[in-house]
Each structure stands twice: as C-alpha cells, then as structure tokens.
Length: 386
Image (tube, rainbow, N blue to C red; front, side, top):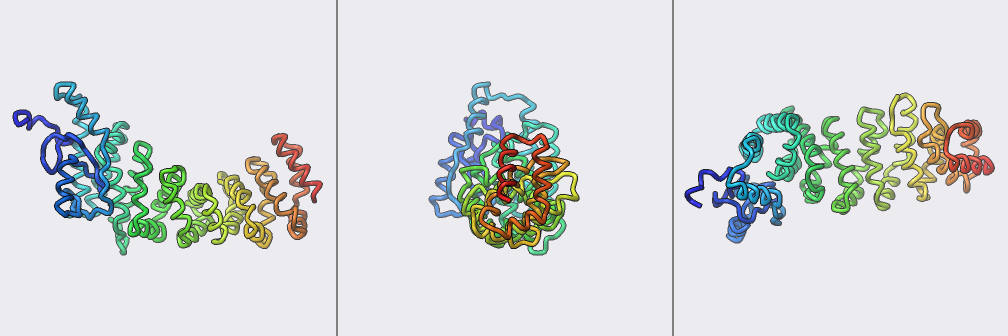
C-alpha cells in the first residue's frame, strides 16, 4: 500500500486516513469518508463534518456504491483508468473543495458553480460524476443552510446558480436527498427564498416542489409543504399575478394536489379564486396552462368549500364556461363540463350564472367540434340539466 500510495487518485482517498477507501460512506454534507474513519470521529464526540466543519443535522452514513464500483474498476484495470476520466474528475475535486470551504465567499462559490455548469455542458456524463462525489447533498446544504437577510447580488447569483445545478443533478440522483429540507431551519430557508427571492429562484423552487410531489420517498415533505399556509398563500398569489412565473406556480400547485390533505389546505387558502384569475388572464396568452388549472378545479370540487367558492366568485362560473369551448384548443373542455355538472346539479344560482355566461352556445359549439364521444355525451347531459 505504501509503495503505491502516490498513485491513488485523490477521489479514492479518505480525507481522514488519506488511505484508499475500503467502505466509502457519505454524510449529509455530501462529503465521503471511509466508514471506520468517520465512525471513530463520531464516536469521539465530534458533531461536525471533518472537512467542512458544518454541524451534522443527520448522522446517517449512506453507502457510496458508485464510488465503491469505480474503485473496483480501477483495481481490476491494474490501477489505471481512462485519462479522460481524470481530466473530468480532477477539476471537480478542486471545485468541490472551493464550494465546501467555510471561508469561500458567495462570489467564489458562484464562480465555482459556473465552472461546473461549463464542464457539465461540455461533457453530459459529468452529472454522474458529480453524484458520485456527493455534490447534490453538498449543494442542498449550501443553498438552504442559511439565507442572507440582505439578499446581496453575490448571494442571489449563487443561489440561482445553485438551484439550477440542483435541478440538473436530481435526474442522476435519488429524490430522497431532498428530505434534508424537512429540517426546521432548512425548511424555513426554503420558504424565505420563495418569499423574497428572484423570479429565477421562485421558478426553480416551483420545479423542486414538483419533484418532491412526484416521489413516494418525499411524501412526508410534500405533506409538510402542503400544511404551510404561508407558502400556499404565496404560491396562489404567484398564480394570480399573471407574471412570467405563473405557469411554474400552476405546475407546483398541480403537483401538491397529489395529496388530499394538500388539496383541502389549498382550497382553504383561496385556491379556487387563484385558478379562476389565472384562467381569465390566460385568454391574453398564446400559451398557458389553463387546461391544467381547469383540471385542478375539477379535482377539488368534491370539497363543499370549493364549490361554494366557485359559485360565490363573481367570475367563477364564467371562467369555467369559457373553458368549455375554445377555438385555439379544446384541452380542458371535459374538465370544464364535469365541473359545471358538479356545481349546477345542486345549485340554481350556478345554473343561472352558467346560462348568463353563455354556456348554451359554448356547449353547442363543443358538440359540433372534434372532441371525444365521451365529452359530447357529458355535454348533452349538461344541456338537459340546464
């Protein structure tokens, strides 16, 4: 071992023992150590990561199977790997140290992330190397560890680039790593970034909400977000604003609606009014997610409060009627017809508003269109009801 010590790639050395990894495990900070070395460190009463000196909110040791596999390959090939491999790895090792350094400024971290993006764009396989090296938990730790109250430009640049890198790496890694956000301080940072962050930050956070909602591994975190009234109010306001991030907000809301408890909370926070406003605003856009918004209205109308909100909103029934038939596209027509059926069956007020809103003409146009037979059957049933 001693004779070949200088030939061991830096990536394959434990930062504590400086020897070749035998059982590599990764901490919540994204740093990898040999199991025996880090266990001794923790057993001695240390509560920090040896390299970054960050406090460990979670002392779990996650086996780094990718790194173990690479070391096995390296051994089988007589301690040699493709030179191109090290051309990719060596700069990443240096950049990871720059990011993890407690003394690095936001500007320096931003510059390191820019270099990572350049390497990733040049060599797509770099994403898998970044996962092997623990970049994903490291970036989550750095972005959500503490919010700069002044939101300096250097800080904003760093967070925007950090979130972009996180979204780029998540397809290569496991979504379970996002559970780091369940920790109180990091969850609060998530909320603060959405509350005070730039448009780019909010768009990225909406996409992260979508990914959280898509996995059973992060179901608890999804429910946690759905219980946060502050966040729900903000995401509904984003949808109402008719801004460049309204579409990202619709996607995030649709993702959160995967849980019934989230749907109930969203309705209580004014979801119906937000979706109605979005649908009406979408008339002036070439591309919108009005059909997705309409599907969410249909989805929550099993809730009595949602029905009441739609009927009482001065433009609620009118917005749904407009979705029954649109010349530009017919996506959303079936959801609109189903929604009108739900509110008109039991409410004379809803039926009257629908007729005044022009539903009869809309239904006749729909029946003459190329919509599906099922939609036409439902449209005919609604006509009889009215």
